[in-house]
Each structure stands twice: as structure tokens, then as C-alpha cells.
Amino acid sequence: MTGFGGILGIIILIADIWAIINVFGSGASTGAKLLWTILILVLPVVGLIIWLFAGPRGARA
Image (cartoon, rainbow, N blue to C red; front, side, top):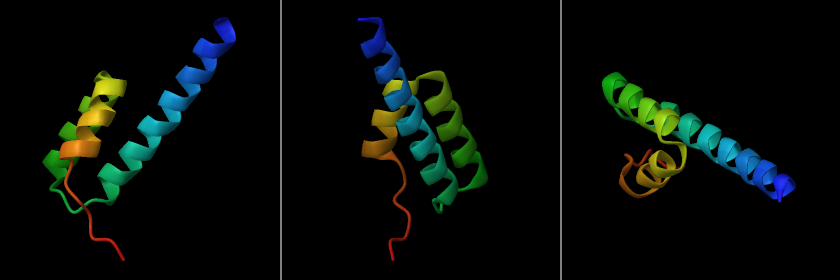
């Protein structure tokens, strides 16, 4: 079971990094970007889920 926990941790880390990159690429204000980043870092799984559903939508090309 230890291997599964490690893999799950890596997946969560990658998802959080992806979310933080999207936060910085969004059109949100600097303060909002900072708050979203802190939320994602403090609550990795919950912050990521909240960002996916409630985060500002950036302009898609």
C-alpha cells in the first residue's frame, strides 16, 4: 500500500502545480491570484477542486 500512497501523492502534486500555473495564467487580479494560490497550497485536494469549479475562466484561444 505504500507505493499507492506515493503515486497518489505525485498525482496530487502534479494536479496542484497545473492548477497554480492556470491561476497565474488567468485574467484575475493579483490579489485574487495570490488568494487562489494560497488556497491550493494550504488545502491541496480541496483547493484544486474549488479552483476547477469556481476559479476565474481565462481567455481560451
